[in-house]
Structure formats: structure tokens, C-alpha cells
Image (cartoon, rainbow, N blue to C red; front, side):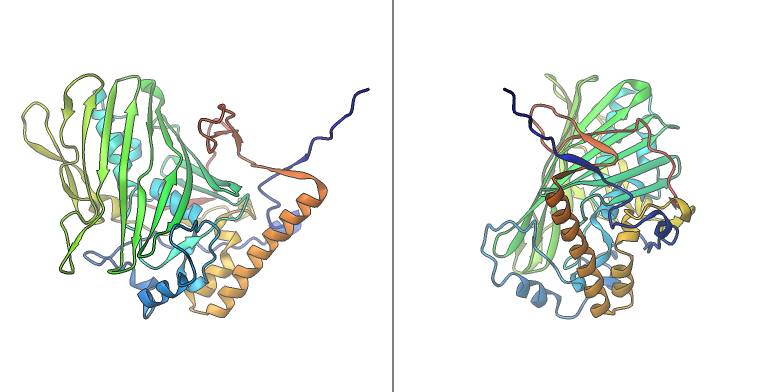
Length: 411
């Protein structure tokens, strides 16, 4: 006698993230804000998001949190949020740049130069963060779809426990195909928060048949004195050419209250497997922030040259615009959090608090309803790679190419 086991029903994410019907979809509203910027020489960040007694308020949040505690599910009031979801913040690292660094990766005829440009792109994604404010934690099934030049980018929150974001970007014109899977794991360490960023990025240059694999740096948030730094080691590799790179983001040190020269710096080398370094150090020790340059040493003794100018990346950045309102999904980040963002931008903290509570409560109700019906959430645009458990946060895109988005970045 065989006993049958019913498989859980699957619920596809995307349009019904908030339980809206097709008629309600016609009135989807979005709030789009300018890309995050950091004022030159000011670690406190954009004045638009600064609040009085910020350090004191931040420390008060953690007074009952033990060192070593996982902050993944830690809830922040809207006064500590800037008006963007984490999906939008990740996406801006890819599509918000005054110079098309990603598109240029496949333009060089020399393999070493292509590899160097990929390293430059990796560095360009690590924009300075703003101390004391963070983006919204994405809800399950939330999406973000934006086009910039010929690049189309789509993100989806594919898991909530643990929180995992998947990004797929394609540029048919330049032959670029990118996947980015990210899981931040923040832990409280007494005087700082250490954020381990798990997952990987895979960048394919289709015309050259090359695949570049890299990880993300971690982030350290210090309370006294207040500072946010990218830290740790990033490794970039290309199996087809044999080139590899190691980029080190040192933790800033303090002496007598003064910041060391390691602030926002990156050092490293490019080398070929089983051979001497091809270029050392690329980028030589120098600042990597919104108003600095990164240099590389010519392996043939030709001196140093600038490979990255942060001002070019940060210049002429504008807020995305809504090009096709009828095509925006209710799951779009700018729609899901629109009322919260309106409250933050108008400094109506009570309105923002109520709107944020409504979004989070709706997600809890939907999760409870799925559980009662025996349903399992399935991402709309990605599927688990089933790679034997080596990387549980890796997904495959369902579509080969990301289509043009209803939200575009003007240049």
C-alpha cells in the first residue's frame, strides 16, 4: 500500500505582492528619488537625511542588544531610513553612473585591459554609505526594474528568511550579462556593526566568451567616532584568461581622534595564475570615494595611470523617471514603499511610521495565509540553481534577457 504525500502548492511572486487586483494596478503610484550621494569631504553623508543627535540616537537603539547578536530582523523606525528600498540601493550601484563603466568592460581588445576594466567596475559599485540611515528591508517578492542607456536591470527579493536579493542585468548592445546574489548578515559588536555580505557576482562578456566571478566587500559601521567603511577582501577571477585580482579594503584606524589615510582606500594586485603579478598594485593605495581617483602601475615599467575617476561616476546623476506608468508592477520597490517615502521626504514621521507598519503587517498576514493553505512562495523572475548546496543563495534568471523597464535613468 502506498501513501501519497501532497506537495505544497506554489505561489508565484510579483504582481500580487500586496494582494491588489488588476483594477487597482492601474493606479499604482511610485516615489523616485535621486541617487545617494556623499558630500565631498563629509562622512556624515547627504544633509537631506541627517537628523539631530544622530550618534546618541543610534546608540540608544542597541542598548538592549548583546554583542554578537544577528541584526537581520532588527526593526528600525522610519527616521533611520532614507527613502529607498535596499533593492533600489543595490540597483543604483549598477545603473547609476555618469560614465558607462559596465558597458566599456567588453570594449577592449586586450584580455588584461578587459580584466582591468572589470576590476574598475567592481570598485565603482562600492559607493560610500551614509552613517545613521539605511534603506528599507525589502519584503518578500518585492521587485525593482530600471533601464539606463542600453542596460536593463531587474532585482527581486527571492527570500525573506534569510534575506536574499537577486539581480539580473543585461546589455545587448555591449554583450554584457550579469547576475548578482547578495545576503547581508549584520551583527552587533558593541562599538560597531559588522555586516558580512554573502553571495557572489558573475559578469559575462558574451562576445569574448569570458566569465568574471567576484564577491562583495563587507561593511563596518562604527559608532564612535561615526564612520562607515567597506572592509575585507574582494577576489575577481576569469577562468578563460587566467587573470585574477585581489582587492583589499582596510578598516580605518584612529589615532588621537584623527582618521588615518586608509579612509575609503583600496589596495591590491592583478596577476595571472601561476605567474608573477601582471599589474601591481592596481589600484595603488589611494582613496576610493566619491571624489578621488584610483591608479594602476604599468607592468612594463611605464609608470602609473588613472583607471578610475570617481567624479566621472558620480557626476550628472539624476533621479530615475517614470516612462510607462501602466507597466509598473505593484511589487515595484518605488510603489511598495511610496507612502513611507512620502512621509520621510515631508518629515512627517508619524505618517511614515504608520505606512511602514502597514507594509510589514501586510507581509506578515500574507505569510500566515500561505502557511495555512500549505503554499510555498516561488520567485517570479528567478529559480534556485540547485547546485548541491555549495552556494545556497545562488539563483538562475528565468528570462535570458531583461526587457526594457518602465522606469528609466536619464543622462
